[in-house]
Length: 200
Image 1 (cartoon, rainbow, N blue to C red):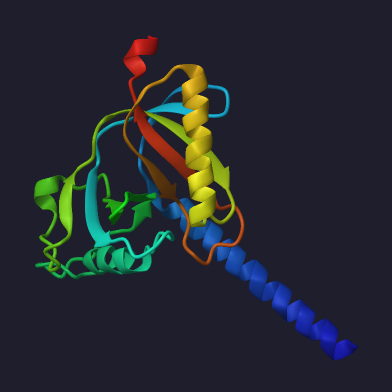
Image 2: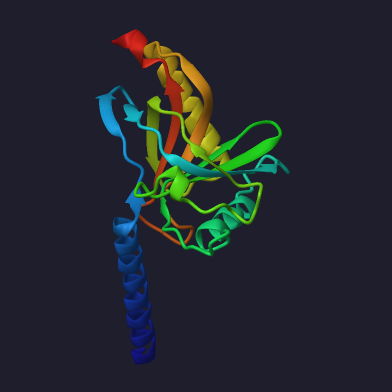
């Protein structure tokens, strides 16, 4: 019995240590900036200024969003896989989107850089570019986000936008803010560009 109590106590300390380390890391990670424009019923309208992105595409292999290969390629770039062997800080969120043929992933690069400051990737399939500036509808949710849940949230946001009378431009995107090993306080967004000027 005493041994079991010791094991449980050690496990509790390890879990709490892991949680606080994860929480501290998330608080230090730079996040993409935006301006909150309006809160609607069930979603937000945000204005996102343009940001510098690193983006890769991969072939879709099934219904699941197989993000691992794209993540490894982008992580390789910021961890020194570039012409200067320069390390670049990780930011949040990570963008993912999917169509019938391709999986797409983008890292937002730190705001302290100009696009001309960034080293060229060793992987020539990585594209360094500016994101689209504009108004976006955003549906936020917690927990782990598998393909089925992401799809359900996309449909939910689409229905909310239809009811509110907003028209969309381009595809819906999933934004993830946490490392895969984060267990609690997970944050996720579904976003899509909208024609906001029609409602002003």
